[in-house]
Structure formats: C-alpha cells, structure tokens
Length: 242
Ligand SMILES: Nc1ncnc2c1ncn2[C@@H]1O[C@H](COP(=O)(O)OP(=O)(O)OP(=O)(O)O)[C@@H](O)[C@H]1O
Image 1 (cartoon, rainbow, N blue to C red):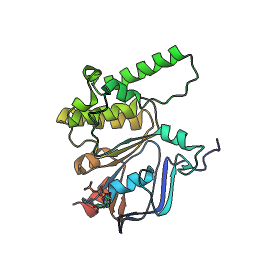
Image 2: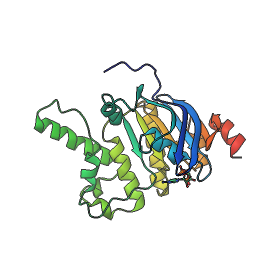
Image 3: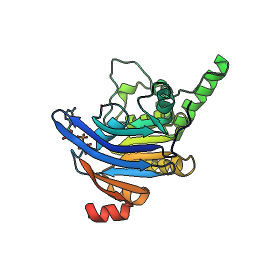
Image 4: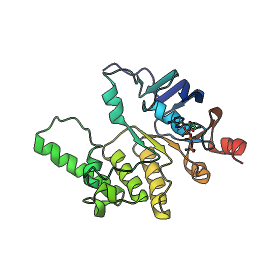
C-alpha cells in the first residue's frame, strides 16, 4: 500500500454537497488529527449530517476533496483499509424486525480483522472481542436479545459496541448521545475520553449538547451550510452560541 502523504486522520477541502435542487454544504474545509475530539455544531438543517455522510461516501459530493487516513475515498485498493479504521454511528438507526440478529451477532459485524490465524483461533479472538466490547458498554445482559427488541438508548449503546469491537483510528458520531439516560450519557463521554487520550482515536461528532461540547471537545466547527467559525470551544461558543 502506498504511504499516506499527510499525518491528518481526515482532511476536507472545499467540500460542497447538493441535495435535491439545493446546495446544503458549501465550500467546507477543515482537518482532524489523532487524539482530537472535534464537534460540529449548528442549527437544524445546517448541513451537519450531510457533511459527514459525504465525508463517509454515503451520499455523493459535487465539489471538493476528502482524504481519510491519507487516502482518497475513490481508491479501490485502499478503501477496505480505510473502512476498517473508521467507525460511524448514524443519527437514526432501527434494526429491521424481519432480520433475526442478536445483539452479540450484530456487534460481531464490526469485527474485520484479517484471517491470518487458524479458524478456531480466529473465532476465539472474535468472540472475545465481542464480549469485551459488550462489557465496555455494560451490555452483556442483552447479548442474546434480538436487535429489533431494543429501546432507542440500548440500540445506541449497541451501535457504539459495534464501533469499538476492534481498534480503529477515527470515530464519527451523529448526535450519538441523544436518547441516552444520565448514566449512559456520562459513560458515553467517559468512553470518548478514553478512546481519545489512551487509545489515540480521532473523534468527529455532531452535537447539540453545547455544555458537553465545551467540557469535552478540543475543537468546534460551527456550520450553517458553510463554515461560520472554527476554533476552540470557548471561542466558537462565545461567538456563535452565546
Ligand atoms: N434526502 C434528502 N433529500 C433532499 N434534501 C435533504 C435530504 N436530506 C436532508 N435534506 C436537506 O438538507 C438540508 C441539511 O440537512 P441535514 O440533515 O444535513 O442537516 P443537519 O444540520 O444535520 O440538521 P439537524 O440538526 O436537524 O439534524 C436540510 O435542509 C434538509 O431538508
């Protein structure tokens, strides 16, 4: 694999996105380094979800450039590696009740380590990773439960367990803490802190929870279709969300 050219986990350059007949994201540029927690804030309909969906290749963008882990998303050779290293927790997710999948099976879908061991070793390693991820989110008691039977907050925590089942480098969250109870929310922010500080992940999160953003993030991007402000939480929140 070619050596990535730059050290950022994510580089967005002059990105513009159209939805329907309107530009919903215009000329957005920013970078995200490892060990950094960045929040994207802004009013409803400001283009926050569209921006991260375009970064992840879920929706197309019409102008600009996205570089993830030093690689462009259009390179088919490096795309599997990039996908392995980036986890995404969407805003709205509901498991289709017609799909009979348990919580543990669902978390296992996030496991994509290379199969260089014997099959039984691989299986044992995978099972251990699933169990550790469930433990991390206090979800052991739900392991055998069907995904479709979970509450909204439980589903969010299972999605996070799916993201954490293997080491990655970048976590992208769309209002991930919404719907969590007080204890779940505290646990969620503590976990983000551990991922960032101890495990070196970069975190990009959309949030409307400004006090949490102020207390936990390193950088804030205020988006209202285009970038209105980018800097420390203190500066951006004082300028745009006072
Ligand atoms: N599938 C779609 N087709 C057409 N327009 C869309 C579509 N999805 C979103 N939009 C529009 O794009 C604009 C940006 O939406 P987006 O969901 O990115 O905003 P947001 O900042 O994430 O909002 P919120 O804070 O309410 O979640 C909105 O005006 C929305 O109506």
